[in-house]
Length: 123
Image (cartoon, rainbow, N blue to C red):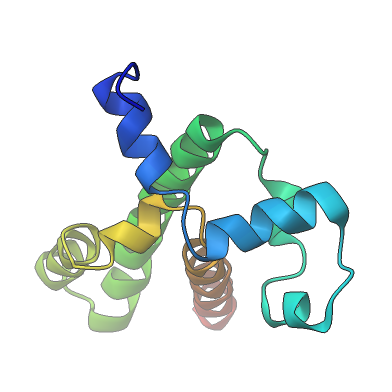
């Protein structure tokens, strides 16, 4: 690992816990009952390259931030509170999960999309 650049080492440090499980599912499929505890489509959506998965997770985090702002503006009817909520999401301790190969970020995105479209239907 000594010959790797800083960025390569940083991305390799994200390859832990759930990310290892998702890579296993990508390579071998759903062949064990423990695999079903994870988001079923997540390993199939993201590529096996850690660098690409990292960039896609950043994009999903950005979409989540925008959705938090939109939903917050609609719920509180106050752009300052909505903006603060979006900043708190980005700068929270959950940033590790937002950039790692975890399904939580995608789950939040789908949940926020549901809230956003539900709010559109009622307005």
